[in-house]
Amino acid sequence: HIATSLPLPSERDHLRPRIDMIVFMIDIKSKYSLKNVEDSLAHVDARFFLGKVCFLVTGVGRVNCCSVDMNAVWKLGENYCSPVLFCELELEGTRVATAQRLLRMLQICAGYVPGVSALYFSTLM
Image (cartoon, rainbow, N blue to C red; front, side, top):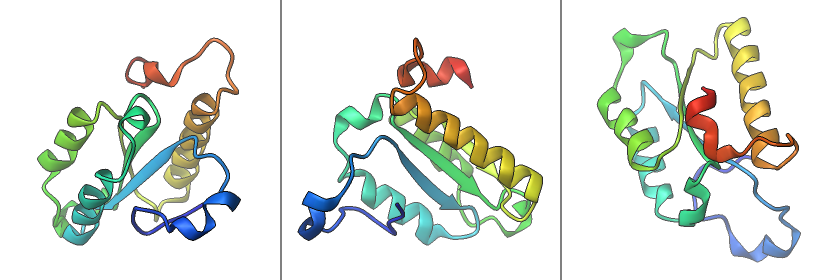
């Protein structure tokens, strides 16, 4: 499921499946996307930051168009003890590899990988 920001509307809470992982996407060429992520973080339960949140930075192939301070992105990862992934969505190989990586992380977060906890993401990456 995709949402543009948090909090999610409450009127459909009873229909919403459980949330196993949250991926915050930050477009490197949009300061608004970083601000939106920072504002949305306040609506996430603190327990989710124990291995169920990651930050995906897109557009990394266009560093000359960068509007986002990369130190701010790294600081988000550090402050929330969450991995930061980088991706160039316009390159099919990179897009596929990132999708596979996110899917694997989701499998771990949902408990489908025996013996592996999402708390170990930093050592797995």
